Length: 209
Image (tube, rainbow, N blue to C red; front, side):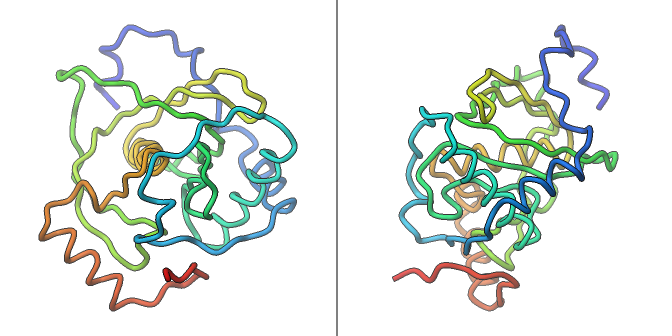
């Protein structure tokens, strides 16, 4: 978007996540197994996850399962704790506002703090696989940068605008124990939980005891 041109940066510091999206997503998904989605109230969603320290076959298998789970639930992003795994990793298969598809993985993500003059807020509706059938308007910056590591442990940076920026912020929040409804007013949070209680998820979820 327009405000990006005001920032002094080198574009090649960011990964290219827009090429071969179909092939890469399919390869992950076909190796993986879809798992049920944890929902609000499950303790794993409400605490900061552990850092990824082992970039091994076990992590690769988890990432495959996450892509399979994301596809089964028809989501655009998924954090590990949403399938009950206490690790800081999320996957995404998300379009930006120009319809460009982005596919990737981020381990140990940290969001850049935007200066006040760069914070252009977008108050679009937001939803979450862990709060099924519920939506609420939530203001978030329309540009985001996440820094972390890829599945091999290499440092990476991912940038997004519009809907994809929202996805990057939403998934990073998950890994620090925060759901999008935690950012809502008490009234809007209550309404979102009402929507969830009245709705029927279109995918398998883990019942809370």
